Length: 532
Image (cartoon, rainbow, N blue to C red; front, side, top):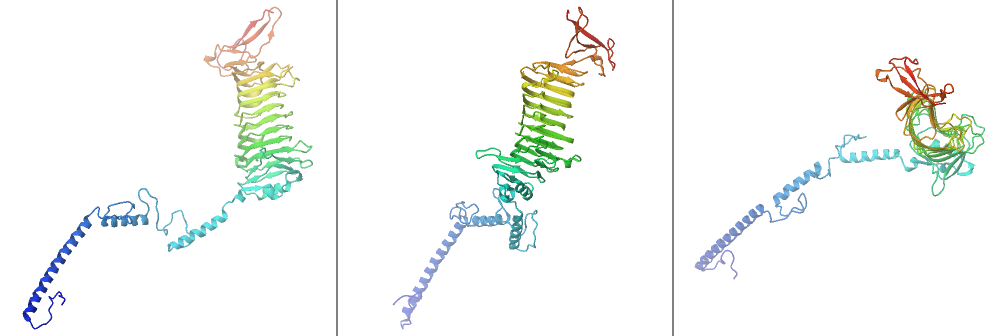
């Protein structure tokens, strides 16, 4: 018989035996309760220990950093709460925002529809992006190739229409690209929008040349005209050649309109452009702050680079440019140019190398001049700073011995530094290297000219910081006490007087203050007898 928890009571007739079994059952029950109590107490102790433990369990899968060993359950729950807060609200100290409520967009974003749920925001942004993409500049909008518009580039077919169509199609700010080839052009090309007009000039594959023949057209037409207000236009890497018989029209013209500054042409640039056999190869009219770099003029029939302004051009810069064989004009001519600069440029075989007419604040630096017909630099009614010029074989025209070989200043002011005259033209009969006339003023410092410096007609020139004059001053005024006794040497002298008592006038000494110029009252003539 199996004994149950009730002591195996069976209902037999032996009552005493049944009570004995009942007692056993009670004892078994008490023992079992004691055992369960002990187990419950052990369980409670284990739970208390687990709660207080710092090493009992790892919570790697739910901690904030993902690598916090030894965190108890309470710490893990705290970390999970913090993690959820970060995801919703933004980043921690060293993290970017990962998720925000996108129904609250950036203040600069303007929804095109009512935003109720996150999906509205997503759809709205997608629609706006698609609309903006339609207006985005693509590669085909940036570059317009003349060959895509019918240009052949073999030097025989007339490509004029193809070029005009490309200019018409090009958007402002784009590149009109001209691949290698020779392009025959029979009409003026007008740039009437701000573009970059760019060829290849010379590379391993070949070069880009525009062959113009404009014979018989209206005299005012040029090869390439940039209209007024086309600020920022760039022309690069082209060879522009006049193939016609007429040489009275100009090559590239930047044609600003005289008037308010907005009508001028601002901030434009020419780079790596060669122009040949036009009247003026490069012509600039009413331009401001323009850069001409690494360009070349060949056989201009008037001037190579010419700033011819009705009002003025301001801030023109010529750098590393070369003008050759312009036998009727200057390699570089500036007229009514203010604050222009000519740096590291070279003239070869021109009538004048560099010519400034009615200019103000022009600087010329690091120049070279070879085989100029008249002289290297011609200054007329202008203020110019010349700092560094080397001349070779200057003065090939011997029709006038009074022409200087290097520099003539005809009125105005010139500050001349660092002239290196290597040799005048062989057989030259010139008398002077530098000539100041018509009241021109200036100073000459550290120059190695081979011939004399002459000052004519009441000019006042400082030679190595010593003022020179050409005759007794008659118009100088404003003398102070400090000027009394000052000697003004003659820049050039000649022998005068009767035989036996000839002399040269070496200078004049100031005798008085004030504004008068009377010999023997305000000035004393200084003589040196020659013994002749």
